[in-house]
Amino acid sequence: MRLDALIFGGGAAGLWLLDRLSRDGHHVLLLEAHALGHGQTVASQGIIHGGLKYTLSGLLTQSARNIREMPNVWRDSLLGRSTPHLVNTRVRSDCCYLWQTDSLASRAGMIGARLGLRVKPETIEPDARPEVLDGVYGTVARLPEQVISPQSFIQDLATQYRDRILLIDSESGLDFDLNSPGEVAAVRLTSPTDGARLCLQPRQVIFTAGAGNAHLRKRVGLSSDVMQRRPLHMVMLRGNLPELNGHCLDGAKTRVTITSDVDSQGRMVWQVGGQIAEDGVQLSPLALTEHAIQELHAVLPSIDLTSVEWSTYRVDRAEGAVNGGSRPETIQVLCAGNVTTGWPTKLVLAPVLAHEIASRATSPYLSTSFDTREVAAWPRPPVATVPWESAGLHWWKLEQAPMQSRQRAA
Image (cartoon, rainbow, N blue to C red; front, side):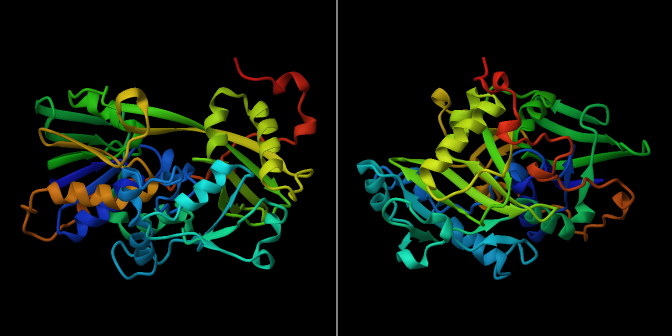
């Protein structure tokens, strides 16, 4: 089966690119070895950032410039005004709230957050604040950053392009025929369900598999040292909680970032990230829970956490390597032979990565209409489960945990 392009990795980047290349007339398939969105995409908080967190020092940084158009790009897609059409993607909230701690640096950050952005904080009056923000210090603002359900977003595109997405066994069911390192002549697949075989001959091979890019690059004779990982340890809590999506600022950092959703049992679930998830990398789950309780009481004085259950999960941010291992300013794209490797850096930058890779792609060379009947019987990957619904995930109330389990991880 001849192809213009073959994409590996069914997260936000791969699926957005699949839409773009398909609409440009390319004969393109996407291969996924796990579940669609597995890893970074489904574990993300779903905030369509507009660059605020990169202006808290009072400067319009390069990161802020690169991301500031994204809320409008995503909003147009979510409304069906531009492609991909994401009208079936669930929007958890149309805005985030922004508040601050009682520090001069934090107050300066609130001012800096207005610099050069397309979406800017709008101060709201005390009587218009959500009840959960009663008692917080100083200004509370509304920020027009939408919060989507990443799982719903993945499902939306998976439904639209089901005929072009295949489940593969990346170990025993995948082989590359190489003309030279980074020059793929063919990709040979064996079905993980019935042993059927398929030989794909792509003009271009594209890796958008996040952390999986390193292994894929090795398979085609390219270096894996071009990738870095930056870990997070996220906090979750569920129970009698109010809906809340927002950031608490502390100087040039987001002290906590909270997003909320409802689980399959109708319970409110909070995901808590920001600086707390950075700090938690060196903590055990229970030690991080104790730290989270202290932080949440500090930034939300009126919150009642007595009856909630807690859990945590770890996730790595896989990115192109940067000197010193610091956060990349924007997307990263590497080309070698007919292999392109891309990392969007953040969920919100998936459209930028797709545009960059698509703009480098040669024009479609297969003029016939794309017939996918040859892969109609091939198995399709499921959509990944959200972190709080993962099978076997342990939840606890802090008072039920033995004291010795609460110590910091070695």
